[in-house]
Length: 181
Image 1 (tube, rainbow, N blue to C red):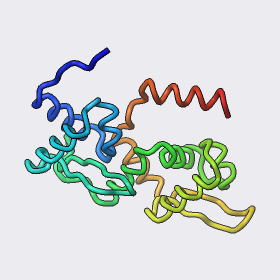
Image 2: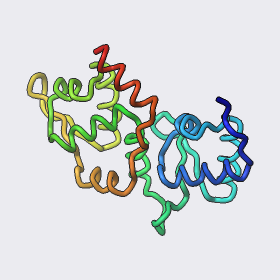
Image 3: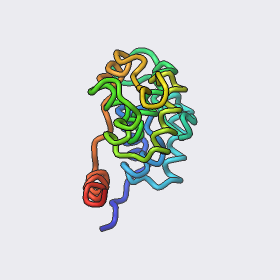
């Protein structure tokens, strides 16, 4: 089935609305969720940026979009919140933060099992989350524990900015992963 033709103004409106609703989302995810051709996406991000409505920046290794002033907020998103939002828009860091938020401090091994990721992947994201001052690792060896550095801050950001809704691809990948552990 072919995607319906969309007028230029509609692309810009859809893009602005999506970024306002989900600040910190990376460009590939915008393209995937809205089915916008990459050239069209780049064009409209540039135009919306020139109008002062959207800012695009590299954050945490991703090119991400933020509204200059989110709906319902009179001020721009604080820099430390932007970094946290980018992390929460990625599946593994989000799973790590939610696991620690809901279950409390954990050993790295239990955390890796809970979020169903490899040891090297977990180590990579734990280093990034620690560098962002979102979590801390204490102890050594078998006594090592990972915990959130500011659980209240995580709670506030989770309440203020909704997660991306799970789509058909996300459900299929989760289902496939459960079939083939």
